[in-house]
Every structure is written in structure tokens, then in C-alpha cells.
Image (cartoon, rainbow, N blue to C red; front, side, top):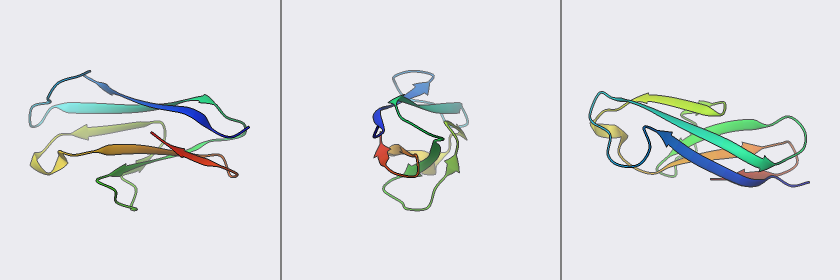
Length: 80
């Protein structure tokens, strides 16, 4: 079964986050088989910001942009 239904959500939800606030990004998978590995990427960078289904950021000027969660199970990969 390939990984499917990768979703990403933020806490606090919707809208801008003020400088210095805590932003929590979470990643979930609707369907997959086997152990999953998560990695977080920003702005298309190949270097991961973190691993695991959650990423916590204390926001700063340099944190604005597009965040992406990549999930792998050893056989397949999917991105949010």
C-alpha cells in the first residue's frame, strides 16, 4: 500500500503568527503500511528542519514561507 492522504495543519490554525509566537505544525497520513519516517522542509530545501510528525517553531523574521512534510515508509514517499 503506497502512502496516501498526507495532510498538514498548524496550531494556532489559519491566519498570521506574530514574531516570537510558538507555531506547531503537524503531519498525518490517511493510509500507509510499515514504520513511517517524517521530515520537515522549508522553502524547497533538501535539508530537513526536523523529524517526527510534529515541528515546533518560535517564529522569527526568517521563518516566513512554505513548509512541507515528507513521509516515507521505506518503499514509497509522499509530501504534504
